[in-house]
Image 1: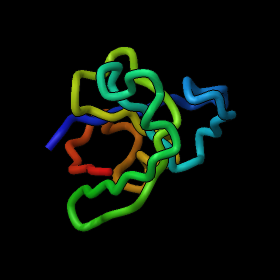
Image 2: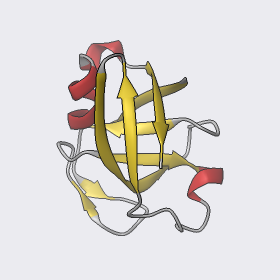
Image 3: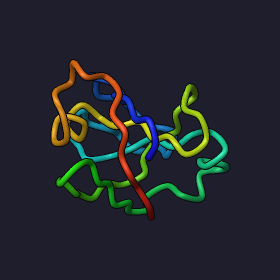
Length: 93
């Protein structure tokens, strides 16, 4: 299980070049996993407790260690209240 945090609460353009909305189900990868952007647009499956959903790689996370992902507020709140800040989830492509 890996530590996850909140990507942010504002709308902006992600490293993949698309306009990101805080309510979208998108994630940011750690710099080593983001690489040159080859994973941009890839779908991922994320599970936390008894909840599972899908998201799209749309950004890179400067502060994330390898294996960690960063979630938008909309995606994070599907799993837990935003005040939790960090949760441990399982994810895969």
